[in-house]
Amino acid sequence: MDVLPIDPLVHSETLLRRAHAVLAFLLAFYAHSHPRDASAPLVVPKSIALPLSTVSRAIGIAPVVTYADTVLWNWRPAGDPTAPLASATPNLNPLSQFAAPSINPLSQSTGPAVTSFEAKLPELECLMLFTGLPSEAHFYLTSARIELASAAALQLMQRTLDELFLSDAIALKRIAVNLTSLAKVIDRMTVLLEDMKNGCDPADFYNHIRPWFRGGEAWNNGGGDAQGFEFEGVEDPVEKERARMTAGASAGQSSIVHALDIFLGTPNTLSPFLSKMEYYMPRHHRAFLRHLRAMPAQTTLSALVRAPGTNDTVKMAFNESVLALKRFRDMHIRIATLYIVNQARRPHPSPAEGDGQVDKVKGTGGTELVPFLKGIRDNTARTVVPL
Ligand code: HEM
Image (cartoon, rainbow, N blue to C red; front, side, top):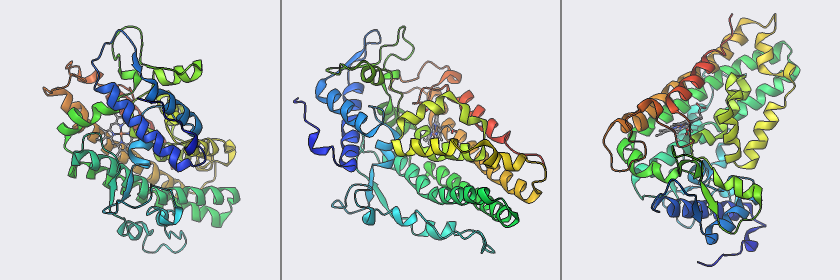
C-alpha cells in the first residue's frame, strides 16, 4: 500500500487522534493475523509504520493500540452515525456536560449529586471494534462510563487542593466533605466496573477480543532475545526503539486511577509499571499527573492527614476515600480473575497463555497479573492513617 501523507492532519488534534486510532488498529490487524515467528522481529510495513510513528510523535503517545484508541477516542452518541468524532466540537461532546457536576461540599445534607449526573448518562456506541462482538463494545463502553463517572472525582480533587492551600478551619471542614464525596464517586466507579459482567462474555473476551490488544512486547513473549515490532522506514533510533517493545493496551493506561493514587499518596505512585503506562496516555493526561506530582510535599493531602493536630473527621474522610479505592481494586481483581485467570485454566483455541501456569499469566500490559494487582491493592489499603 502507498504511504499516505499526514500533512493534511497536522493542524487538528482530533484528526491526529483519529489517525492514531485507525493506524494502531491496522497495526494490530496486521501483526496479530500474521504467522508468528518468535525468533525474529515482526516487520511492520512502512504504509502503517511511517504514518503511525509520525502521528504518535505529533500527539505524544506510544505507536500502538492504547486505551485512548479503544476507549477515550472510540465513542459517539448511540444511533447518530453523523455525530462528530469524540471531542471534535466541545459543545457537541456528550461527555462535556458532565465535566462539572453540581457537587457543593457545603450543602450536602443529602450527599453529593453523583447520582443526578449519572442519570443523564448518554447512550454511547463504539466507532471501531476488532471483532464486531457485542462483548467488545461492552468492554470499551464500561471503561468509558467509568471515565465519565470519574469526572466528579477530578473536580473534588481540584477543590480539595484549593482548600489545602488555605488549610484554615473552614477549609478543613470542606476537605472532609469533599473526601467523603470522593469515596462515593469511587464506589460508583466500582459499581460500573462490576457491570462489565452484564455484557462482556469472559470466553469471548479472552479468546477473541484480548489477543488484538497485544503490543510488540508480546510478539516474542517468553522467547529468548526480545525482538518485538520493527517499523519499516523509520530511521530515527529513538522512534525505532519506541515502536519495538510496546506494551499492549490496558486500562492501566487510564489516568484517573493514577491521579487518585497521587492525590491520596499511595505507594503505587512508585510502581515502575504504572509509570511506564504514562507514555501510553494522551500527553495532556500525562501532564496533569506530573502537575499533581509536582505539588510541594508539605502542601499535599498526605502531609495534612499525617500532621499532628489534624482532626479525626478529616482523617476518617481520607480513610473512606482510600478504602473506596481499595474496594475498587478488590472488584478489579475479581474481574481480572474471571476474565483472564479462570479463562487461562480452560482449554481455548488460541495459545495466548495456555501453558497452565496460572500464577504466571500476564496482563496485556505485560505484568504477572495476580501478584501485581494484589500488591497494588494492598499498598492502597496500607495508606489508611491511624486515628
Ligand atoms: C475484563 C475487564 C478487565 C480485565 C481483564 C483487566 C485486567 C487487568 C490487568 C491484567 C491489569 C494488569 C496490567 C496489565 O498487565 O495489563 C490491569 C491493570 C489495571 N486495570 Fe484492568 N482490567 C479490566 C478492566 C478494567 C477497567 C474497566 C478499569 C477501569 C477503567 C481497569 C483499570 C485498571 C487499572 C487502573 C490498572 C492498573 C493497576 C491498578 O492501578 O490497580 N481495568 N487490568
